[in-house]
Length: 424
Image (cartoon, rainbow, N blue to C red; front, top):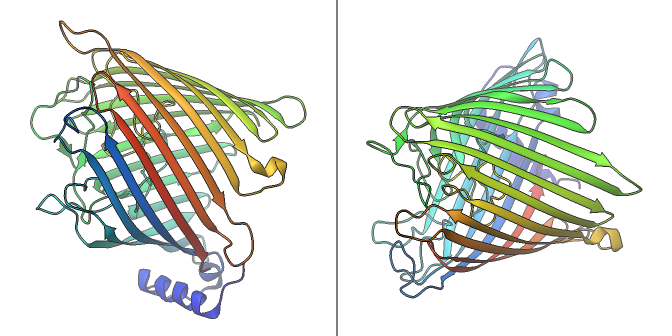
């Protein structure tokens, strides 16, 4: 898609505001730069189906509608042995509808009266330096690895203040290390200390405050063969937990347009001073693909004295983490059956469908209580226009139902309409 002169001017002006260097005009810095702006319209409805409403506050439903804009700028690097550059994420969200007593969806920033603020915004900047095939970033950024994965499942994304080094000097090997000191959550307009997820029936307790200003990780992935990738990460949330996570992903080509993908995950979490964390998390997902169809079967098991530990608000490294639940309570065992279909295989590119069902049991509920059980069903239908005036416009409907004998019973719908405009 070609960009208009106005779009290019906006992107270049934004790049100029992110970085002031004598070498800004160098060709590689501009030529390798990328910029997009996404308009995201998000409607969220969650009904609490049990008598009395939400177990947390008695709320009967969360129902909010909001509009967001996300500007992403990734510059190239200046020429020379050491290259310099800058990245930026600009966000702006505002309320379209949020009636009395229906806030708390995670789309908008809460206000002191129990409702939601009318709007919120942020400009997150990061400087970067590249030497050979190694890149260091310092500032605001998102992550996507086994140790920490930023959530982007609401109106605006979760962003961290951090330092991050990625090295790919050896073919097939990616080394990854970072240190995080603050996070700006999906429904927040300022940076805060990093907190630990303790909800559900995890059995996790913390002495003192449930937050810290230090999270570190070191690890990476290695492409053993063209079909097999192995990963390992060591991470530490200061005073909360230490974690070692392992992964193996194998994609076996079968007959024409057929594959068998195996995704194995294991994480060992232990306490780090002020918590009682002790967890082993084992997960496996096997997916058979044929033409546009995919059929998957997953299994996840928690063992140890607590449930799984991860940073609050992030996407955890679990095969059974889905739209609402993570099936990571103390001693929980869970199964997943999933089906996907890509309509491109029958001549309708851009249209996809997914449905899955998960069931979990054996949750530790304490003395004199039967075992905890829960199930969740998800359905998703999405279409992205491929050409014409509406090219890059995406419409997504996500539906979920949850039933449990120890947590909230929930029916949920999310409708997301998004449009991404390339600027550079």
